[in-house]
Image 1: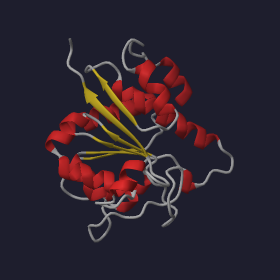
Image 2 (image 1 turned 45 degrees about the vertical axis):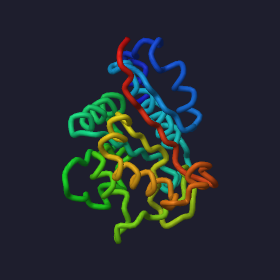
Image 3 (image 1 turned 90 degrees about the horizontal axis):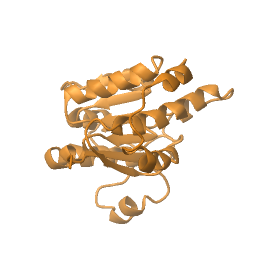
Length: 209
């Protein structure tokens, strides 16, 4: 069903960010996407992620720890719901959790979701450990030491990254630290991404000419 939905999707013009961005995202590379509003930035990370999920589902001996999961951080409730609608329109079977309130959602709900879409402060609450410190990610397709069977976020997306950096710097840094397993102040590892870490995708709006 997912393949049919993707095939029938009305893609934006390939004159947008697609030719430059898609190969990098598909290959799992950290990617910065800047393009005009409505040019298809969201699909540049949604389509590759859903393709990875389909591949995992097709594996006969798949493990839960290797289940592809994605965290999307967006600056507001409306954009969070827009991203969720895009994902559900392509793959209705994907478990999407939108978190925009002040309360931290139950751990079981977060663990069960294939995609978690949250505002900055909500994302920080989700990714923080019980004591408020960044947890050590579990092993899986994001790599790193294992702390259990819950799959880590294999892809972390900052949508409207320009707005996030300008208005939500503190929670943004906390989320990046928690999902990457890079301690604050460890500049060398933060820069070089030594050893492991999820794929990061940053989407920003470029003004129309």
